[in-house]
Length: 350
Image (tube, rainbow, N blue to C red; front, top):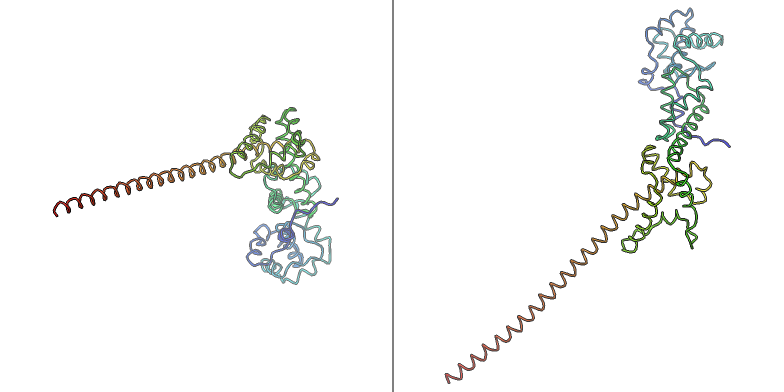
């Protein structure tokens, strides 16, 4: 089965295309004094320009000049101007292919450069693996490989070789993470983790699916159900130090796999990967559910507090109304007494 391509077309084009912007041309193709001394020792103007072109491409993008390859006009003119020859002198250079091969051999020795060889795949895979544990963007990893190739003075390989390095490094980085987690588990832990993929007693739902799907709406019964799941997960007694064995980003990726995969998919994984994913999922769920329980408790307390406040307000309102009624009754009695006294006074005067 063919591997899925990791590198984007944009990246590959940028990595292998000869620049045509004037600033980029000046940045990459300005010849230094040793270059000029070597070039000027060539007898023919065509050989001087051809050697300058070979030097330029070895430096950037880091590959030999192909037979009959004519550089973009801006680059060719820039190189020709530095050595004082006509840019059209490049045409006679390709009349004798042996000259180009001799120039390559000369420059490989002088610049301490060499072509990419199959053994470099293994060496660069080992070098890239630590970075590939946490960085999975292929283009970014490829940038690192190209910089390392230039540091080691190795020419840019074919795209297939670069893809192979990326695939191998990413796969190896993932396997290292799986091994780091799985090696921290006892056989009893592994058996308990495998049981998460079994159905709960009396149901068709797996233990893992049950643990992954608690009701999160604020209610006392839901809080009790979350607490039940937390107690179960903690009863597995997985070492908390497992989380320290791999980078946090990688741990989160493994936990995300466990939260997403079906039980059947998890069963089909090789044991080392399955146990690593399940261990990360259990530790993630234990932490996630604990945070969820705290949030739910706060919400429930808020509901109870608001309810108590509302009840207290209602009681105060009722008490005020009762007092107001009593005051109105007293007021009516007082008015009646005053009216009666006024009537007695009036009758006495008469």
